[in-house]
Length: 276
Image (cartoon, helix red, strand yellow):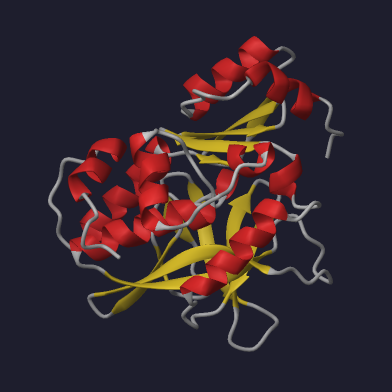
């Protein structure tokens, strides 16, 4: 999978000019730079376009065309880059728990990565939208860990051999997803990707979600509502009420090359969506 991958193009895309060595310092630097340069966005499923997960398609979209993507695309690109450098990486799959009642069972529709490095297990994930990690987390259940964009922790889930990823918010801990350390198969992502990008009730088919990590803050555009949050999780939200400002936000704040999209039509589509 990685033999034809051009690591130098990836480094240029995220603004990295350091060594290509499998060390913790390199992992931390890449984990911060990637979500600052390559945004989370779902314009493809929102517009009915296919989300392709083969490596040439992912590289063309995220690197060459300067688009973003969602977890399966973002974390696959990160997996390939890390593997090419020499990291020992294992793909994992998770059930999204973000804003879900505890009694609701969710499907396995999120991708994350395990890195075994110097005798320790680390978790990496640059594809969880407005709550994505900006540093790898040591697999140390119960330990609060600071990242450049807030505190996270892994805790034992109320299911045998499973764990919850949580982020710290002003009102307490919020669970983002539930996972196990069992390796995922690549076909698992193909099935989950098809579901999330085509199921008529999928949030990715119906609502715009576009997020980017900024130095010291996060930007998240949900349909027409732009929220900016600092590292503590405190934020403010403004509504973009015209297509020009909305398109400028996609391009300039989120960092998406919107070439080829009818932004006026897309704005009208998302502006008509009910508030959540």
